[in-house]
Length: 85
Image 1 (cartoon, rainbow, N blue to C red):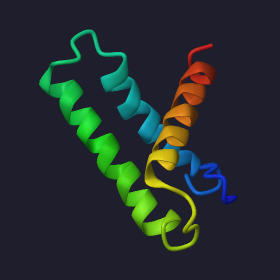
Image 2 (spheres, rainbow, N blue to C red; image 1 turned 30 degrees about the vertical axis):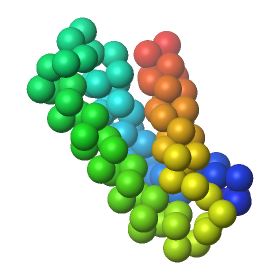
Image 3 (cartoon, one colour; image 1 turned 45 degrees about the vertical axis):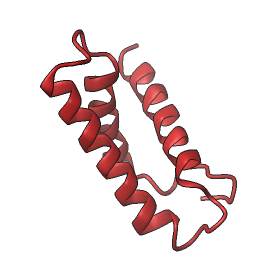
Image 4 (cartoon, rainbow, N blue to C red; image 1 turned 120 degrees about the horizontal axis):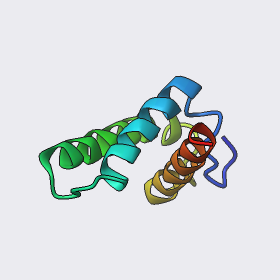
């Protein structure tokens, strides 16, 4: 992952698929206040934080967690667009 925070290469295809599923569950929920949406959001955030803490922070000190999280969300949106075409 380059120092600019680009998340591809850190997040595997399988991880991205699961993160995109969770992202879709809370971001596109018919009821964003539902327990299911809240659980999906919580799990998404937990996994993104875990990836950052284990893979990004030790190796890319200039990358901020917020930047990494934003990039993962962008990758999830792109994944979902490709998946639903």
